[in-house]
Amino acid sequence: MAPARRLFSKRRAAKAVSGKHTIVAVDVGNSAAKIAIGQEPPKPEVDDITAFSGGPGQRLRTISLDQSDWTTGVCRWVRQHVAGDDITWWVSTVNRAASQPLQRCVAEQFASFQWHAIDHRAIPMEIEVDFPDRVGIDRLIGAYAASLRFPRPLVIVDAGSAVTIDWVSGGPSDASTFHGGAILPGIRLQLAALANGTEGIEPTFGSSFGSSIEGGSHVAADRQPNIDVQPNIDVLGPGKNTQQAIRRGVMAGICGGIERLAVDYARTSVKTDASGRVPQIVLTGGDAAAISGFLRVEHVLLPGLVCRGLFDLAWRKCQTGCGGLE
Image (cartoon, rainbow, N blue to C red):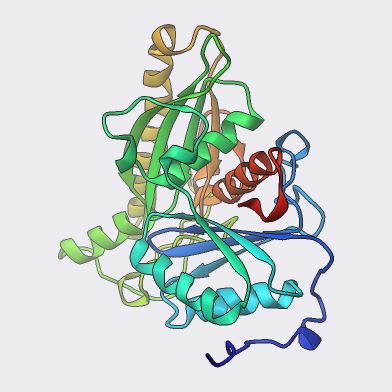
């Protein structure tokens, strides 16, 4: 068999880090993939919640799945930062049509690698829903990561193509329990639906909108309305033009849903959490920064939550013997 073609030679990997086993955490969503690199899985208790800096040399990047060569882009970026092929890939995917080509690309570009695609059975928490195997694995990993960093009960909001709002409680044995939650259309899905489904709203397409802590959630360019969703702009009062009215409506709907569901979940805390604590809201995802500016309740903005959770799982595996994380 011919040797695998290399995107970058080891000599060209000027910024690469060597000498330790490398972990690559990959969160493949419906519109983008988030990739993080770490030389060792960081311990959750020393993780910095204000930036993705849980360990030396750790990096985080978001790549849109709209790019025709996005899998090559992932491998190229990893190769730029990692010397050698001894890499373990920890993967969360809700989009197997995208993650399978990525796995093939990794196999072509890295001579020695391990691929761990995580499912619900790998999450060390109780999952109290009707069909645990049907819950998006990103929701479960995010819930696990948040439960290691904050007192429960928790409301975890992941704002991407869809906005998921989930409830996690603690129990008598201090084990976390995932209780499910709610799913809303994300900012861009709502804007695209308004632009495509109504005659009175001009479908003005163009540049991206809204700030992002993770590169944003992405919608194909020909479906992306050019409506700015910057936080703290005209957050009070009615919109004075169509764009303002749409912006206010979409953001009010999402933020109102988060605030209402947090209250509703808390009312169930007598049954699901005996601590009596006010639930902590943890906000993550590509559109989290835009939404954060409109929320009226206290919350923590935490980028890369799913990738953090993948590192947590890798660190947990290392406790029983890291040796390749087999």
